[in-house]
Length: 433
Image (cartoon, rainbow, N blue to C red; front, side, top):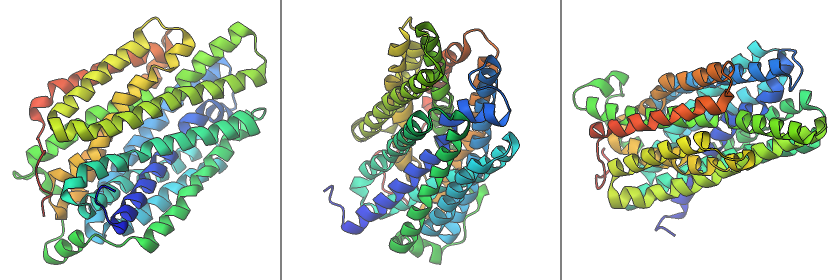
């Protein structure tokens, strides 16, 4: 299948699991925030004060996650070029698994912040190692397909997080929202077992081993030298636009669905248990719409990139992202119908990320590949971190809440369309040594 050997499939599967659990651990907080934040701040769950605090802290903690993600991505991208892809994957997966599970024991919001920062460093570092490993092990003619398949694990990770939250918070502990979030965080330990499997069965890519033995160690400053300056700019700009859009939309998906469900429950005069169940069900429906759209959008990057090229592909995805955001948050839709607008957002905002697993490694030679890809993919999170914080800040203060603020996120992919002249086309280019 696809002309890959058994070992190449093993490498792809290992990286697939690593990135899937990366996203799994990263979004668990967004699901539990409506229960976690009020509990740690000693506010009644569902009260107006709790809703405002949840919006604010969801934005603040997501922004901190992105900053830690950026730092981890740059640091461990460099580490991956120095000590190898497999070792770096092991270290980073253990960091984000243990950091996420530790959140279950947080006694207050500030300890939770500390544990999320530890997890975010590992979450940021895993991507560069996994993407570089896949690009170097795959045959040239299958690099695009392998890269897109690697990113489909994001749908696996977000779907698994959705299902576990629904089962734990929506069913097993539906009548105990004050503690249900702690059990959800404990699920963050799952990736630790996968990390040891990666170390046992996956070896360092021969391409990296050969180059590492015969070349000078990489330096981060090389990314800004004349040979790589425009390349680095191209990667950073495309990742930045995608990151701001994705995190601004996704970080507030559970809060967005919760708000719609609470309004609906009040209209139907539901009791507390029925309201909690409706909230968890609507979060599930919105997230699944986002995930299904994301899976389809990720796979569509394969024909778009191979037939049209990388630059036209980015332009199409940003145009559809802009239209889908304006429609979902601006059109006069019935509450339950509005949830499914996240399918269109997933198709475009989520789907475009299927390209970065092959586009960014294509930009740099082997000795700089993890450093360059990690920097481009993650440094944009420093700026992208502003997005969720601003959305949360304004959503907690304006009358329209999250919906009114999220509408304006559609301007971000519009800016991406204006940056297209700066994008470097890599279609048909062999991976550089």
